[in-house]
Image (cartoon, rainbow, N blue to C red; front, side, top):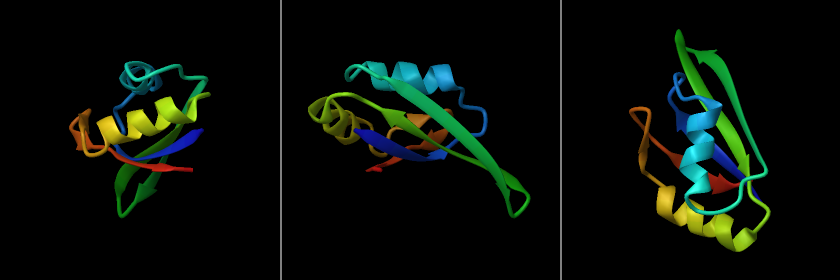
Length: 77
């Protein structure tokens, strides 16, 4: 299952995001993309987990949690 991750800090690294989700199961891929909006850099990404059950558990556990100073916003992609 692919999870869309919004509200990442531009300073959050791929490895930080990977560590965060690995606590909840296997992760097959992590991507982070950045863009400029209103003069600020914004970041989002995606995390792919092979097990839908683990992915849903990760979303439930991490929704609204702080990572890199920002609160994560997660949804099934």
